[in-house]
Amino acid sequence: MWFEETHGRRVGRRFASAVVGFGLAAAAVVGCGSTSKAASAGTSTAATTAPLSAVTLRMGDQATSVQTLLETSGELQNLPYHVTWSEFPSGAAGIAALTGGSVDVVPTADAPAIFAYAAHDPIKVISASLPSTPSQSIYGLLVPGNSTIDSLASLAGKKVGWQTGSVGQYFGLQALKQAGVPASSVTFVNLTAGSALSALNGGKVDALFSSDPFMSIGVADFHDKVVVSGASYVKGETFWIASSSALASPSVSAAIGDMVGRYAKAQIWAAAHRSQWAATFSRITGLPAAVADLYVNRSQYVTVPITAANIITPLQNEADFFYQQKVLTAPVHLTALFDTRFNKQA
Image (cartoon, rainbow, N blue to C red; front, top):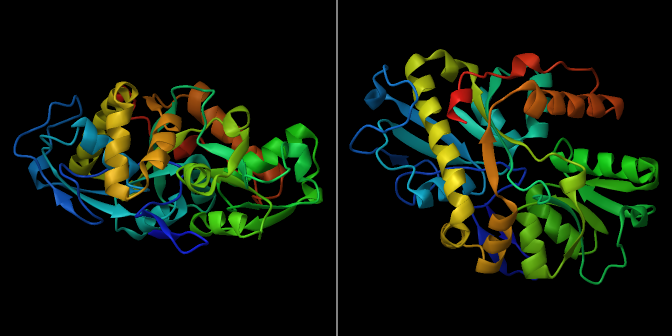
């Protein structure tokens, strides 16, 4: 996907919604739908009893961020199976492809997982990551550089953008509630991730509940400013979601487990090699180096076991909040959404 600045200048290539997640690639820098396979078996602790050489693991991605992280860290070397990659503009689009049968695994943020489960999609959350630095967040309230908006209270009477059904909507509703600002006092505008910055800097909205990499693009390229960090309002978890049909295959499941383990190692590598990852991210996506640096420094995550305390209960609280705010029309109970078979890879 291409993003066009309001002045017509291209500011990036092939990147998507920052709800985050955080996508992956092949053993070399590859494009959407490309394939990779290593010459020898991997060393992951995932199950290897299935004939992995016959497996093609179909991975989805957003913003090529999983791609660049795994590529740059070297974790895609010596794969014992094939991998194909598909790029999606949002978690919701990736989940649609997943349920349609064109991919096996997609990265996404938390809110799309809730809405997919509420729609009875045949999916499972199979891996979860949390920010390694809780004070950092890939979410924020973004305003133009010359805006007088400096707090949540300043949003009353303003037009504010977000993407409906996203973490941005949850962040916005949660933040306004905690600040004592009635949601009814704000005019909300539903925007796609690709159109949001143009709307903000073209004057169609006064503020934007945004996420990276778009938030970093706004700061670096438009000179926008982040006036409220999402760190105090959203946990910021990201997920890998697999289709039930992929998990039903022992060989595909084994490949998924191996890839989960590789991604966990890549996240550890990233903490000590931020500049190297940022340079690769900039090169692959076409985003300016300043944007890549901001994005990478806010996108330090660590894979964690899926447990009630760190993942399931917080996500259930989010689903309950969406229901209380009438975003969901019926309550949902998320326990069955999770598959913990790969917790040992965290």
